[in-house]
Image 1 (cartoon, helix red, strand yellow):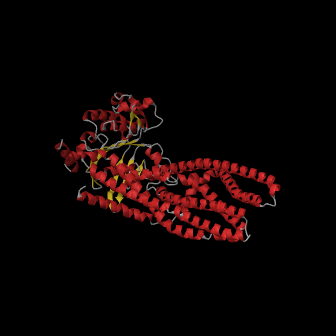
Image 2 (cartoon, one colour):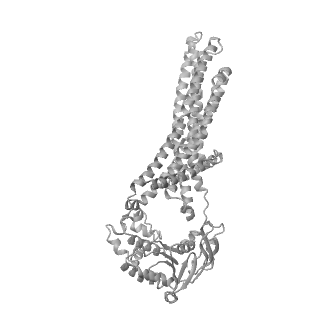
Image 3 (cartoon, rainbow, N blue to C red):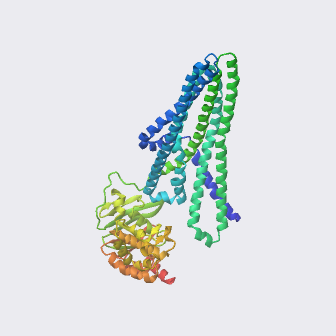
Amino acid sequence: MSAKASAKGRSRNERFVYQDDEAIEKPFNWAQLRRLYTYMIPYKRELMPVIVMMIIGTLTRLAIPFLMLYVIDSILDAEKGSKSTGMLAVIGGLMLALYIVQWASNRYRIKYTSIIGQKVIYDLRNHLFQHIQKLSFRFYDKRPAGSVLVRVTNDVNALQDLFTNGVVNLLMDCIQLVGIVIILLVLNVKLGLAVMITVPIMFIVSTSLRKRIRFAWQDVRMKQSRINAHLNESIQGMKVTQAYVQEKDNMGFFNHMNTDNIKSWNKASALNQAFGPVIEVTAAIGTCILFWYGTHLIQTNVITIGLLFAFANYIGNFWEPINRLGQMYSQLLIAMASSERIFEFIDEETTVAERKDAKPLPAIKGDVKFDQIIFEYEKDRPALKGVSIDVKAGQSIALVGHTGSGKSTIINLLCRFYDPVQGRVLIDGIDIRDVSIESLRSQVGIVLQDTFIFAGTIRDNIRYGRLNATDTEIEDAAKAVHAHDFIMSLPDGYETEVEERGNMLSMGQRQLLSFARALLADPQILILDEATASIDTETELKIQEALKTLLAGRTSFMIAHRLSTIRHADDIIVLDHGKIVEQGNHEALMMKKGVYHGLIEAQYRYL
């Protein structure tokens, strides 16, 4: 990799690291944890029998060592001898029954907590996906697709363990711990306090790890998001990468991010695993205290051997939930790192929001008015500066101008992909901010230069314009834009499967499908954004003939540089740096010999 490329790579990485560090400097958010658990509220009735089974299983586990105490002391008590044989048999049968109950309750708990947990994950992923579909273009303008993808997949998946067993296990372990402490203190207060003296030490040591572990897992999630974003970008830009022979540099940058990711993962994993040894050492110390002090108490006839055995059993059961709680905390930290990123998206407010009193837009005639529009993509950098346009229903309007003059911004405002900073966009005299977005966009059709083809059949891609369209209507739309012939030449005609983005089709073929899709929607306002840019001249001439019929009675906005597309427009609006500098039909503007005349001459000069 060249020094220049390396420097660029480092500066880019340093910027990412700075953002990551800034993002993780947050305290543990208990309110966020409670918010996560609100997704379980719809399943509280299903959770109740699971909790009952959990309590039954925990109580049976606590009862078994107590019965064993009685059995051992009875066997060792020579005075009872054969008299206790029948009682021992009863207790033995009772213990067997308790083991069976414990097994059955645990099986039920594990099965149904998993089912409920998957339902919660399903709801959370649906909620997240539904929300990001409503977010405006500004949200996607500043985020790579891979970063969005990782929130819906990896980050939601990271919460599965928490919902499938974490909640119920947390309750079970807490009940078991409280029960064991009470039983130990009831059996012998001094011995109970002696063996638990190590617990505060364990908590002091483990507490020092918590903050570092939380930051470490947050860092892992950030770096995984960066990898997904770069991977998505690399795949989509593979042709450019190979065309400019940049595979090595691209791989070098990916390798740098991948190395950062593995280092972060190893660090988080190492900190996570530190909980286990801390608990094991603490448990070993507690066991040594138990047998040292317990032996002394036996020798002084304070306790029996059975009681010491029961203590040992309870202590073993005591450290097991402590260990699980330590793992649960680590699991919770992982979940918090992911939930922070999920709720960041869920809390994102769309900049193009419907008003609470928004009403459906009635069937429109197609009058459009831009009233003193000022718009900024970035603050203090206006893309449109006081633009006013008045279009009558059925008129065709062409927008022309140099790149960055504001053409696409106008149609983006008309579709309400963005809202103006000042001014109003009116359709039939109604401010489009007063109507529902769905009712607005359902009456506006758009064909973009960068046509997107979904994975599926040709027929399904055209039907995307109107899902209830019949096969005949789909074929009629395709015929109207002269797409029918090339579709029928495909192996399976309209049932031909195309991959994402339609890579098996030419650019011109993809645009024809998009054109058919928009026409099938039968909009009253039709927008063509460089829609014929990649269509050959012969096909374009056919489309122009079709447009004369298809656009009759519709208001249309066309962004195009090709003279054949715009010369028959009723009104041509020439934009320059966000302002209207000329307006009129083709003949009138050519006679002015102004900006439009210069654009047309430049086009012919380079033909």
